[in-house]
Length: 338
Image (cartoon, rainbow, N blue to C red; front, top):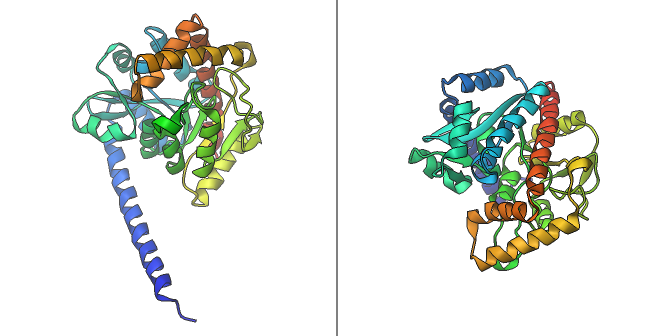
């Protein structure tokens, strides 16, 4: 039986889409040559990519917008060292004077940590920041994009953005979620940031087809706490098995990221009831001061740290280091998958 007109139309459209996608990927390959510069730090990462060595991407928003000075620098360097200690190569990602940087020098980290004019860059800001030759720290979404360009498969962060509390009125939903549905990068985190609506965040990820894995846990971590009351999709107990899942998913042509949630170590977690009280108070103050958009997350994290007398900041640092440890182990196994 011959194909119908509508079937032929679909086939033709599919071929057209495939050609466009191949053209897009070709452009991305060319772009990545401009991402990695001749700087020594970049050259190390570039050589690692060429050799198929294990690499872990790291975001830079925590340096410029997530933590106070000098904790931001100390944490950035500590996280890089955590990756190295697990036999992987750290690649902190940012934009410096309009150039995409995959791997930062100490001087560049210092610059991000102390310059008030550094932008917070998500997907919507990426092209503008580059074209205007500005500097910016990358959110989860922007870091995923640049990591994908550089063919880095594993990325460690503290927590992802998600659906904000009250989103039914504000429609405040992080671009991180959309990026997870589109970009082939594994994001290792301690769950969604505790200031978010975790239930709705999980619903959004399910709708977008993003697998949510719990590392040695069946319950989604809640950033500062190992408990949220919500289940993950799959409990996986080894970094090797996670690496095998990544390789299988992308070999099947199933595009999009994988979210690996890693509970904060018990010794450093904060009681969820205390944290929820602090978060609710911070949200009330944000409403009173009309804090919205990209300013809301830094404001809430800062306010929660103030309310908890710095305990939340200390927990934040420990969980990021813990995530870097796991991400490096996953990257090491992934690099051996062939």
